[in-house]
Image (cartoon, rainbow, N blue to C red; front, side, top):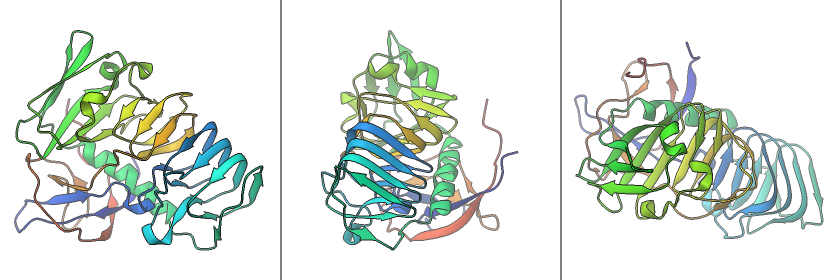
Length: 316
């Protein structure tokens, strides 16, 4: 049995009875950062266009952070938050201040404005992402991903809003194209991707067909991911990213980042209410039931501290 995980959910609750919806504000615990690693970030000769948050050490060279001025924590203006040490050899930390919990060693790089205030609860953030990945994986699918020739066909519920898909990482690993059916432009697509290793055909598939959607790839089981060329956000809180070329357009959450993949500050995951993802009264346990396609306009009710426990075994 997996241990109980702490979780902080940005949620809003629909009326009475059993109908609930959790508003998934994916990057709220890390202030809207472009890249978040629960542990370390290490990389060479690349960049993250937005802000970076890491619970551990940040060790980078010939690297730039936050060139596109997409600060974390808004007006507070953090370009970098590191719980451990910072080592930067050549490159830049731009358009914002930095918090470093340990030591800082910068060579051939300008020192950014340094803050003594840590804006991130690293333990809560780690629990949040592990809990959300698990809770999303227990939602019943509203659509399907199937093999079509050498690619995949994504068939939605036809009503827009939020569609949830269950898919094996093996299917994505060998796919070379997307065919989309019964989807509404602009809607949210959540792909719950099973398997210990996550990849998209070694970057050999164009994600352009998904560019008009709010996309999240939830690698809830993966311990390693090799994702590049992606348009959409990546949630892989148990995984290490090790790929050495390519681009991700969206938010990225991993356990450890050891990669030269460029992370671009676009296609951030928009907050959305997920029907069926709720906090059970008495247990404060996020659980998944059949989500109803369609979105209800809800105001964020804030961040509520809760605990995530193991729920029912995943359906066969």
